[in-house]
Image (cartoon, rainbow, N blue to C red; front, side, top):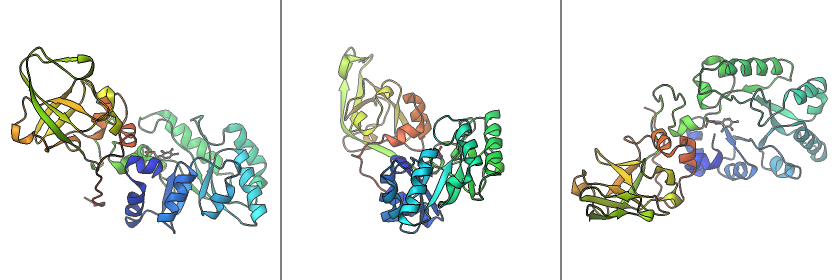
Length: 332
Ligand SMILES: *Cc1c(COP(=O)(O)O)cnc(C)c1O
């Protein structure tokens, strides 16, 4: 899954790395994302989850993109395009088994089962569904699995796909022919009730711009929300909410200097945060040194908890101003 620029991490680099690691099938959210990836991965299967708005079918077919069709209208659009361009385009069809979000609902599914000729001219590569509660042990997962199995048993034979990251860890019956992991690939814990089986692959450091002494009774930052109780050392780091350091981390977040944690104090600014580094050895925290914002001491899921959100939102909101290094994938 490389939608949203590979969860904000850079699909142009991560796509080829995944391909080199043996991944053949890629999913994006939009047609634009799919076409951009096609330019980089000429031979891969590239799916696009957002369907085909009328008028986009030519681009989808020309780009060799496999659209995931979400409703009967899109099936009709692609079937008509197949006749018009005299091709048999590959498609996937999404069956909604309980999300009420994307995919054929029960009524549309019944229509398709009665009128399978609606698929004439299309090459159905796969049937997919998506779980609503895969990160929990929930009976709903079994219900969705059964609904999906019952539907595809009566539909033309094609690969089937149920699971995103968390679903993979529900057991083999959720694996089917293809799985669609995103979050787990990027180090987010797919099993939130247990320890993370995945390696942390994202590290984010921020640079100290200034370190100063703040006297007792003075305040830090906008709104003077943090009052210094006893003489403290305050470091100002070059990262802010414009970089995806969520404003809700004010008073909640920590950064690390070596093995020492430092709390974020005062408000998060657009380009800056202020941290109390009184307990940090001075040589670790002077202008030019780096603090760990996400990394081994600050897993992305923990930063997300402190920000009141999920790891997905932390990664996808990472800003464009960071100097980015891709070190390549490595099995461990
Ligand atoms: C985003 C998405 C995925 C990947 O989900 P993760 O939890 O990141 O693994 C898989 N399938 C669909 C339909 C999605 O929208």
